[in-house]
Amino acid sequence: MCLAVPTKIISIDDNIAQVEFGGVLRTVSLDLVPEAKIDDYVLVHAGFAIQIVDEEEALKTLEMFREIIEHEVS
Image 1: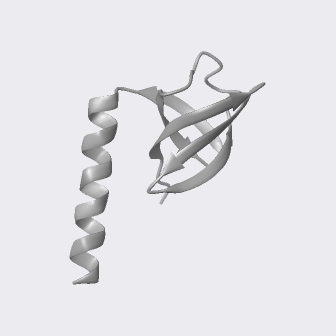
Image 2: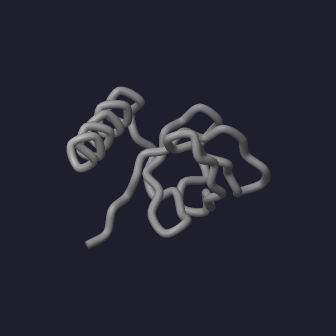
C-alpha cells in the first residue's frame, strides 16, 4: 500500500523544496508540480510532490493522521 502525505512547502531552491510534516523537514522534488510555491500544501510520495492540494483539505487530512496515531498509542 502506498500513502501520499500532505506537507507544507517551506522553501524552494530550483525544483527542490523543503517541506514540513509534523515538525520534520524533508527535501522533495517539484519536477511533477513545477507550479508549486512556498506555503502551498502538496502530496508527497517517494520523495516527489505529486499534487498541490487545498490547504483546508490538507489540514483535515493531517488532523485525521494525528487522531489515528493518538488512538494507536493509547
